[in-house]
Image (cartoon, rainbow, N blue to C red; front, side):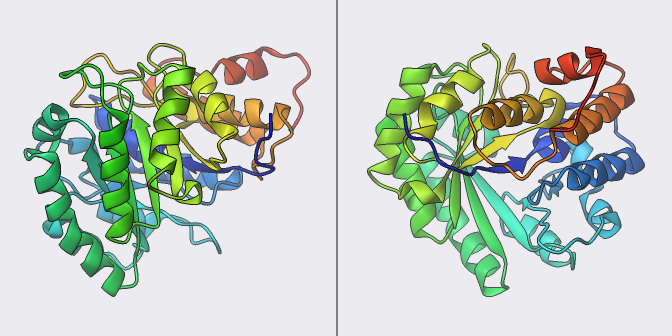
Length: 306
């Protein structure tokens, strides 16, 4: 098996992780979490989103949060925007350098999530991506439900490839393939990525797998040989999905990094600091984190930095 020598980890905990929390998270806690993640070596950390605060109240402080984050060379804090209005809000914040738009490979999920069909969503994204690029912003695309939908069940990999290709064609530098409900298994994940690679160069793809059925690490492993070099994850396994009942958190960043380091793949990240960041946010949320690696790390009598 030939795997890439280096993988870039995109941390989505502060946005995709915290957006599903019922209690409002104090902005100081968010800042402390992101500072801890930066200290671990992460250079791409999703900080928030400019979406309707009625539906996602946890993201209401995104503009204020961005103004409080530490400025570090090479560190970016991407934000999600659903439409031109969201982009206008993002552009009003001087700290925004990168945005993301989010579509789906399921018609039912697209209508539940952003109230339009897949094709309508793509037409809606075109002016957003175009305007963002004109303003010098990088744009990332997301495709939800690539390995299953809570409303439709199985999802055709050809549809995933079509949506990913459309996002790439309109100017997204990278497209993240999301197993939103975490139902994927290794061979299904690999075949899905193979279908997408036929339409989109693998260097423009990322994986965003939730761990609902405990398959996320196996799914990532199955796709590494195809040349994928970008993995989305959330510290402490934070997350869920407001529009997919029963979907649990993202794969834990600590677990992804432990596996990659064990395979000899460089991430540039400090595993011990990641475990510390996960412990901090888990304590703030009043529950144990979902990372098995972090649990073992904190239980070990002789901790060491990775």
